[in-house]
Length: 63
Image (cartoon, rainbow, N blue to C red):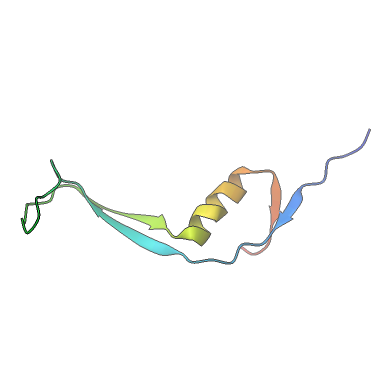
């Protein structure tokens, strides 16, 4: 029986912090509205690719 070797992946890309504020509606042009729930989440192309690679069967380098 042949063992399946996982692929090796190295990701080089950006890691950003997405700042999101929810509102009840989209403001009109030149209008200011009060925001609601605030959240900070991971983002950036490199971070998103890392999540996908972590969910796939691959050997990852680094911590």
